[in-house]
Length: 345
Ligand code: ZN
Image 1: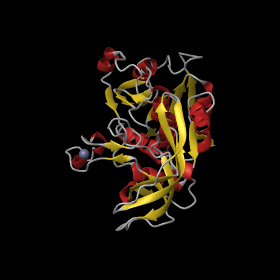
Image 2 (image 1 turned 180 degrees about the vertical axis):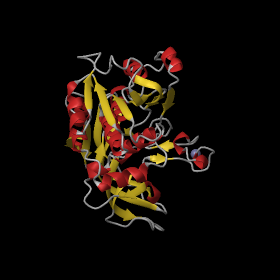
Image 3 (image 1 turned 90 degrees about the vertical axis):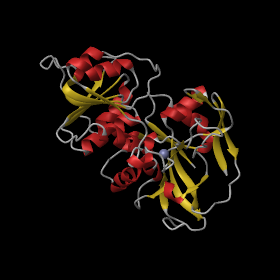
Image 4 (image 1 turned 30 degrees about the horizontal axis):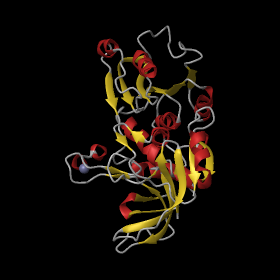
């Protein structure tokens, strides 16, 4: 079988890989679709994540769905032919975090497609992938694989929104209209938000956000004052979801949150020491929360995607065969061209 393997900065190769035998409780999934995430792009451009360089040939990818092709001994929850989304998160299940429903903070996490450990936790961008049956969540019939492959990013978004408290009747600002911002918009609408507005600095993602039902979109590069309402100088949003990882967007969130509002940070900061106006946080008694990956949201996300209640077509912008993985990654890196790019296996 073939896999998409990163060797060095922008050195991505489609290479043959041996299939390993299945252990007890394991299944082999014929992967059909894999979504390229911002972290995959970060590895592609930098061959590292923070303090963790890529030190061996590294299969990327942690957003994938496919069909069960083979089952090992003792497997009971899935059968050959079942269509599944693959959960890339392998918490230890035994530490204090795992035992208190905060498994995303697990002290001994293995997350697929991450260079944090060595040997690295190899990713899912491969024609087949062997994993434990508990990592496979069955997908409703008729759900396209690239929609099912959104289960991981949607889980990230559902986890983040859970930190915001109930959204029913709330006014929500999302900053950054890439795939995570777009899914946040869709999920906040689904959760009953009264209005969801979204910002970006390029027009193309905002068009997708309009198609997803944004109440207002703001191009803050073309019109920096667009979000502000002179009639409500202390801000007009109950919740802000910061998806861009840019200090200017964080400042917009803090200025435009009404007193008592809550910010949830999902975006990853390029500058880990970014500053923000603490006086605004203090005088408006804002709540700052952060969100990292997801905990138990994965099956919820799979069910939501299978229900068809989130119309996410505007998020699905491109699909490439794995032979064209380089072009897929270059397209995914261009925010003027693409939203979520999927590889087809
Ligand atoms: Zn744990």
